[in-house]
Length: 222
Ligand code: TMP
Image 1 (cartoon, rainbow, N blue to C red):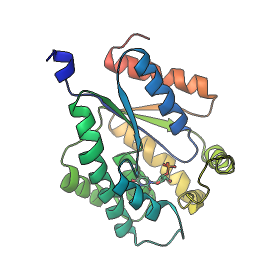
Image 2 (cartoon, rainbow, N blue to C red; image 1 turned 135 degrees about the vertical axis):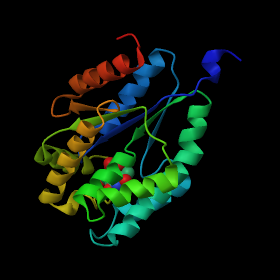
Image 3 (cartoon, helix red, strand yellow; image 1 turned 45 degrees about the horizontal axis):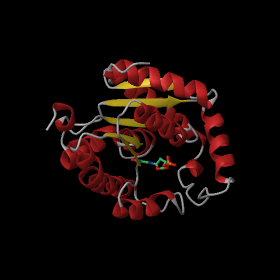
Image 4 (cartoon, rainbow, N blue to C red; image 1 turned 30 degrees about the horizontal axis):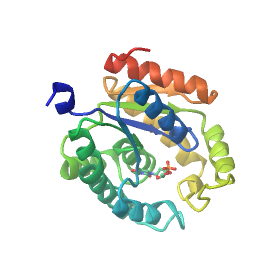
């Protein structure tokens, strides 16, 4: 076996509030990696396995107040454990890169900081469920809350979108402002892992900015 084939892949996560354009950017990032001969698997949270997608349905639809805050956090971690064990780790082990639309920073921001659970409990739960399993690089797409929520709303009206998946979008402006601050605080606390990219521009500019970060981090040609 060549050393390239036996090397562990790279785990990249995209994070941010609502309407940041993560899914569009993940498709573009996967295409750029493929053009350089790198197999990249696009996945998402909550989701990424059949069981985790079933849990996703419980989390992203329905009444804003349908879950106790700790129960909700446990559901996210139940989905995450499935995703990591059955999708992420096997792909990394065969040398593929994994690009995930959201990961643990979303729980820290949504449930830990903006929600009622608190950062300490989310951190302890992560350790219990996943140990020190952490992304190699996290790209945080940042944009003004009102811009993101308006984008998310118009996207929900497009063909193929699942308009019912708006439980978090309905959580109110103060929640979303706290969320934006939480992601920026996470980035400031872990500068070696996290990069903040402005997402309030056209998709081509965001794509170029994200690629510049990935290329620099992993020494790929621009
Ligand atoms: P999205 O895939 O469209 O971003 O929707 C997933 C929603 O779930 C989004 O509103 C953020 C929320 N979420 C959490 O609250 N905690 C988490 O740990 C994750 C992964 C997502």
